[in-house]
Length: 103
Image 1 (cartoon, rainbow, N blue to C red):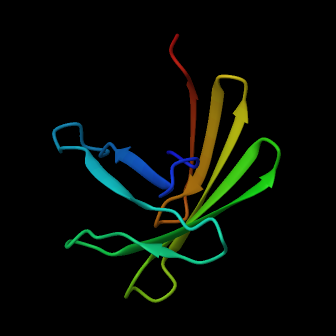
Image 2 (image 1 turned 60 degrees about the vertical axis):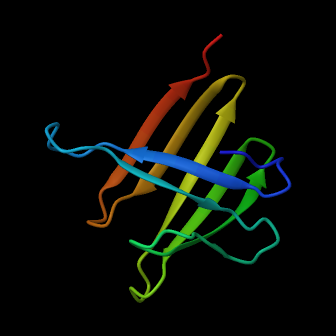
């Protein structure tokens, strides 16, 4: 995710529950002014906007265009070079991932 570029954007990679299936890649722009920005993918259009909740937590709101209210909110919490990401999948199950920057 890059929030300081002139065109803020995200890149995500989702691994399938079945390890034989390929990972799903998603990327797109992020609106930081309260407005959604649409991805240019032909397969599915995702509109995203984000906001800082506090000094260390960023909320990314992703809306699948054309699917009613199919939204998900990713909460990204930063602590130095550590990241904690939380979201709910389409089934309503919470997904939580911890990571750390290399180097």
